[in-house]
Length: 147
Image (cartoon, rainbow, N blue to C red; front, side):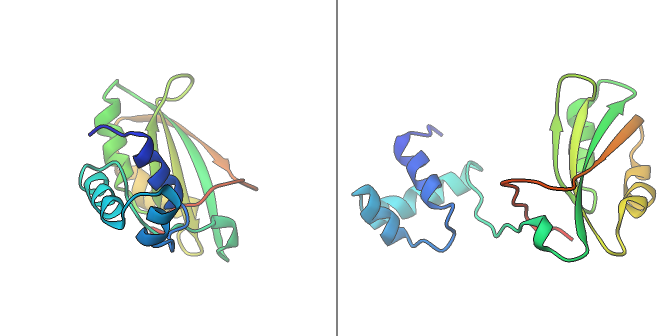
């Protein structure tokens, strides 16, 4: 799917998840049907996903951690996909540098870092080492609530 300037502008307007297609159409001087059909197509193509996001700092008892993962082999894509299905995992990125994968995890009371490692991450074979970074403060971070 080709992402043109109109699609980008529609996506920008959708940052405010409560904005109607009519308001977006009026702002962009296009029809409401054009907005609706483009949003539908971008959603079907996997370009766009519309969901509610939360600020993890405003959720009592929750914290975010970032985990650098080194793997024993170079099966980066499959291991990344496998880790992405673990409870609490918000995202997994295959990266260059010191780590093979960077994992963002949302934790809560009763499911903290110990539970994440012993109940979830321990099931993943081929992990050589991990380094955990506890996030004390973040800016502009909104996450889907997965717990």
